[in-house]
Image (cartoon, rainbow over all chains, first blue to last red; front, side, top):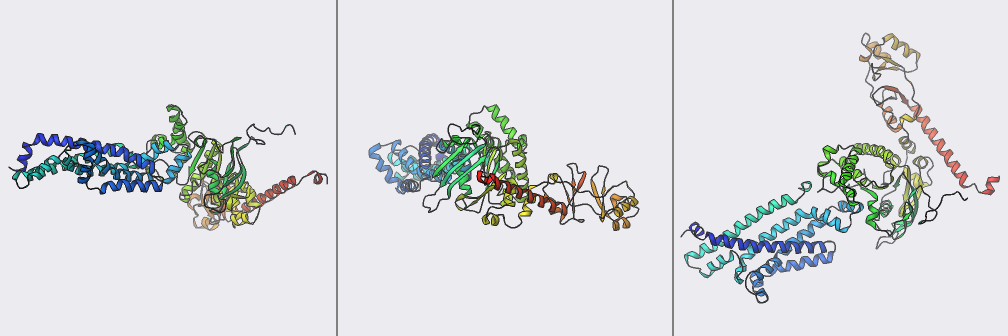
Length: 214
Length: 410
């Protein structure tokens, strides 16, 4: 049975797994973005806090994903819960780092003039600094999304949702003709999702970035 | 003594014409051994442009930034309109004070209109009032609202950006403006134009302005009063430009003005303020005989030919007339190059006349019609009279300061 034939036959599966994969990654990206931007905003003006946050969120990425999923298994059980938490932890670094870089990159003259006009700290942050740092932040979110799409596939080891299921099933049947098709379809599914997410990000970035800084 | 000025309740001994009073204002930055600003006390009067000028590192910018508390003073007081604002809410204070910086600092993600609307919106004006204010301010700084309102800062030239910077600072109609080298990063020709535009604008809005520069020429041009500052923001002299140029208080001021104080003084008076000399003129309809007659009767070596509208078109000397005999008078001689309007300064006039053919600058009105000429004698005369009147003024001040009862009776 050829690969295309296999895909057509498994179309329903592909769609269902794709939606599950997208949902868990999407949820993790949103949570990681909210947490990451918050951490960045809280720490970007203080050197020590900044370095500490970057070191901490960076250290998550050094834990092998396989190990982390299994470590989270005992507190969170099987299914989407350990996957979601692991993905959030992996996704923090690009968001935090780009938030800090973006906020620190805002021209000090702009901040001084905002201050001189009587915008208070909150107004400066919400109306001036974050909008100006936004293109850099959203680039971080985009990187996070791509990284998480790949890692999420490994989540099938703890019965997580998504295309990982196809890959691990294939792994269990190595040597049989269907194994290659299974693994290949899982990988292709992840790639298609990556392209779709990137298109969405392109649109979001265009829509949420002021024409004045494009 | 009962009729002397009353003191307001908040600050004793305040003079109502004083808009900003700095009292013993001091700033020491952490880790520094000396004060950046040391016990500065000065009054800034309502409606005046006060220029803080001095060498770099003298503390002029720090002084200015303490007025809106971008830099918080270490000690001393800031009194605005009789009210001590040293420890009040800094954001409220800043909304009452316009702020223009050299780098302009327009918000790049907002349109020109949104930039100018910043303070009016912060202080809660209605949408319609804000809209009208934006258009009014853009017109005031010579930027067409319909053309530029919805553009972004990056689409504007440096000069246009600073115009918007000034308009934005005027947004909430503050009574005080702080300007930190506002034209410092702009090319010399545009800078000159912006300075002139700003002076015209100021003659309409009459704000109290604290203007920081390191350029003494800009200080002389812009200032109603100039404070020349030494290290630690100590005042070397605080006086009108005329007085500073004519009677520098000490060697520091003398050095800072540099050579050419007389030339700088020429920046202070305009052609319209002096009496113009006359010059023999003919119209293009006149005959060559008439031109020769006039030349013979005057001690000048050329006549000025005017067209039907009275605009100067040619210089015609005796040689030109001979060579061009038979031609109309507006076909002979050379085109006058040194032509200025009455609003120009004497410095401009001098600049033109040193290179001009007959060592005079022709003055025309705004429609280009001949008004008279400026020559070197008049410039010389003006410098001498400015000097003597400034010296006389300095003497009177000196005499009145020293006029205690004992001396008064002698």
